[in-house]
Image (cartoon, rainbow, N blue to C red; front, top):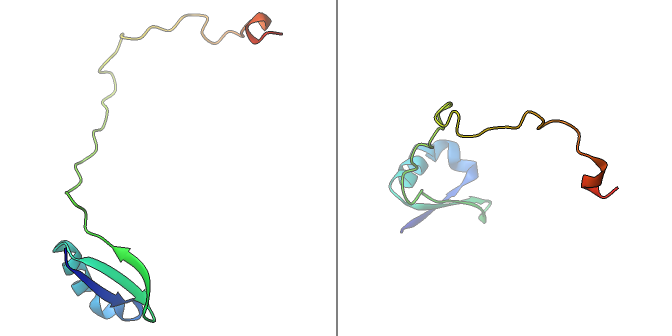
Length: 79
């Protein structure tokens, strides 16, 4: 992987170049007055869209007791 360096003071003038380099899998080091400040790496693989769960797919697969939210007896906590 190749690499390039951009000074953040000149970033507004070189933003298109910076983005193009990142898109072309170039590792970019951002510097501030010659001192490395940040490193921007291209993603190794395109991120897949996250799987969004659909409500109601497992309807009826779980049963909750009628006394679920009743207070626990004192003996439960060892009191």
